[in-house]
Length: 616
Image (cartoon, rainbow, N blue to C red; front, side):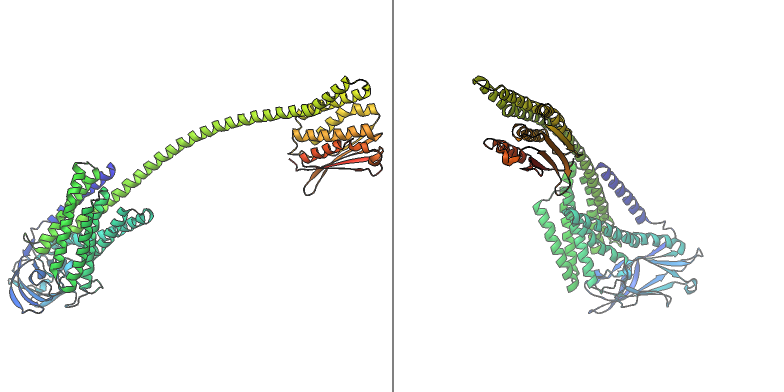
């Protein structure tokens, strides 16, 4: 903010210096000024009159609300070009249309007399005088015929004459001050107004919206100062310029309050009321040919602008806000320029004045808006950087918290997995080895227990324990390894029973869902099937076939077939009470498999296990 304030302050200082230089103008040693003329005044609706008038002469002060025609006769004394150079005239304002003659010969025409589309009073005019038209040693008569439209600022400025070399720099300075500056201001207001409107559209900030309205309304005023042949008829164009000027002043006053973020309700209501009143008075003034109404609206606007100054001064001296100091400088210039234009130019007090200053003073508010935009943008960048740093810190903190929570959750999951595995082992020991040992204990305590039966129960208990241990070994999703381990555990019992084992296990891809629990269920199903063959089938050979079956879904098929007596001749194959087969089916369902027990193709019994699964 401090940098923006310094930039605006430097611009104000440079502008004041430029204003002083322009007003001072070039050295006037070779320039003569005529401040009186004989005028024949012919106002509309009133009798004509001829009299001496002082220059500059303002038609609207003599005949407010009336148009007409006028002739100015000025005597140029001889010897004006003793230096031998060409002579030139400078008219800072004449109008509204004029024909200029020297010694009875028309030198130039400024517009067409009576044609309202041109207004010569807006610009300075350099008129070169041919040396052949001058009277040697005698006075020369300058005649200016002009037509006047009401409320258009018509009249005649002081006539400056002298050598062309001396007049040209003065005319160039006035052109820059009046014409070029107005174009620059109009373009700047248009651009800054568009920028402010775009910012308002995106942000809906009243400050930008207010300035955009002030800028666009100020464009009309500045275009009028530089545009001599406006295609809009007069006095309609005059009313449009007046309304634009009133809106420009009113919205700038409101903009100042918004910049300070101080909006006293009474002052805001005053600005809105005065603005509405000024617009109505402007339209009525040009519509009813009552210039006093427009003067009254200018007085109201000036008083309203002055009413804003105490608030700005309070913010500068009490709150000590830097932007308030800038607004004090710009506001003081604007109020002073407005008072000058109202009292000296409009009303003609203090000897009157030719040029207005308000447009130049109001341009500083364009610089202030630029400073506000830069300051807000810089503050937004700083805030965003601080926000990003804060967010990065908070994200890092959250990441640390999440990392700690994840580590804690992972530890809990590991503990839970260990607990679940312990519970599974306990359950398997209880259901498998435990039940076998309990049965064995009961048989031992009974008299007359067969040694063969006791041996069988001991072997079953050992097999249960071995399977429980095998299920704890890592299988790496390898079903074939599990089957090979089971064969290794059962081979001694098969050899002792004199049963041959034909082993046909094809390549089976790793299966993602092949867990320790699934492996244990497989082992128990197959152990039950082998045990049934050993107990009841009276078989001499067992065929073990395992393969991978593609399909929808793919599956593993395990087929265990014996050459024993078959299901019909060995009902005990199903278990004395059906619990053996039921347990096998329940275990198959637990892993999502299907189990079928059927007669073999060549006799005996076939156990078919289909397990749907997907490769890892």
